[in-house]
Every structure is written in C-alpha cells, then in structure tokens.
Length: 245
Image 1 (cartoon, one colour):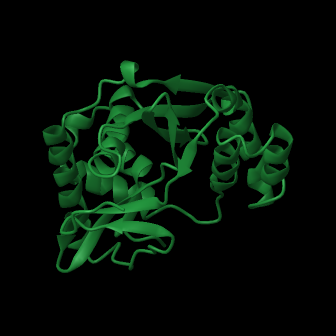
Image 2 (cartoon, helix red, strand yellow):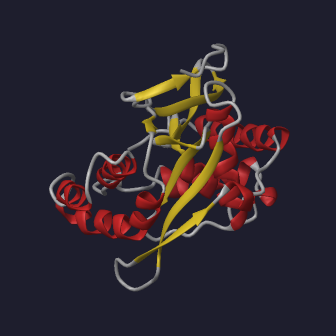
Image 3 (cartoon, helix red, strand yellow):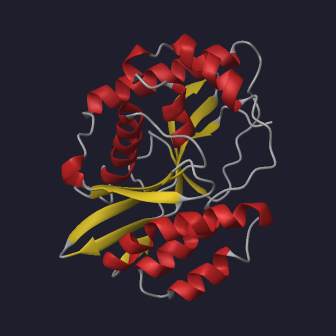
C-alpha cells in the first residue's frame, strides 16, 4: 500500500474536491484515506504514451514508431488506453513539433512532519521552445476522472510554481488533456493555452498546499500512511535548496 510521503499532483488536486476553496484539512484527510490509501494496486500508467509523445514532439519519431512503442511496452491491458490517448493528442504533437527538452519527474517537498517529508509528484515531461518562448508541456491523461475547473487550475498553478521559479522562470504552460468521452476507450484532445488559463497567485497556491500538508499530518497522527516514499527516478526539490535542477 502506498504511503502519503509522495502523492501525485493529480490526486492532490482531486483530494480538494470540485470546489477547492471549500476543502478543509479534515475533508482532504478523509479523501486521502479513502481514495489514496484504500486504492488497490495492479493498474497501469501512461508512461508509454508520454515517452512516445516526447519523441514525436521532438520530430525524432514518426506516428508508426510511436504506435509500435505504445503497443509493445507496459502492461498489455493498458496498451489500448495509451494508444487512445496518443490518437487524441497527435494533432497537437505534430502541430507543435520542434525543439523540445525532456524533464525529469519532480518530487517537491512542501513540508515536513516529525522528520518525514511531504512530497508532491509532478510529471511534466517536456519543455518545448518555439520562437524563443519556452512552454511547459503538461499532460492530463486520466482514465475516467474529469477534474472541475478549479481542480485543473490548481494542478496547473502548482506545476508552474514548481517549474517556472528557477530554470524555467517566465515559462508558459500548456494543458494537454485527453479526456474520456464515455464511449469505451475513446478520448478527445483538449488543449488549453496560456491565454486561456487564469492561474492562481503564488500566495493562494501556498495557502492551499499548507492545507494539504495539514491533512497529511492528520492522517499520519493516526499511525497510517507512514510508508517511506519511493523517490527513485524523481528529482527531489527540497525548499532549503535554492536550485531546482
């Protein structure tokens, strides 16, 4: 069972509920116990399509190479879902192909409790550069969940605060979603550009993250969710260290 030392950003946003301003540490703690700690393993992820998307974005792979990769790696039962995501975002990838740089996955420590770090995992696989402007490519590939507007904005605001404060200061962000249509595995690509995103100010983000950290402390005080986080493959950002990368 996963602990609460490292929770993915999408699930952090989900824990606040549709109206993020109504969330309390107690309501977030209940969600974490029910949905995160109570989650069963054995699922799949979208790493195959994320990797393939980056290669297409960089003009290093063709469509055929991307699909070959997606159809041959990862759990077999998750391959069709990965392929459906690729089909939904392919037009975006080809329209914006060019110089792009892979980013390491980031685990940002937002607080500590009794010596334990509270981390949020951020998967933003690439920064693309066009006309001298850096844009963070942020994917939102969810199997069934559709975030509220507030949840999506919270997620994106945290990404930009984490990645754009240092090496990518001033970078923009694009929200590249592949949302379920309700018809089997079919997905529809929804791309939101910086001009369409009303992101939260830093003070608001910091206040919401403090509320989340308090929720984790509440759960830990009950003696559950204390497993050591698996941080292998992540670049860990400690607030005491000034440089992001």
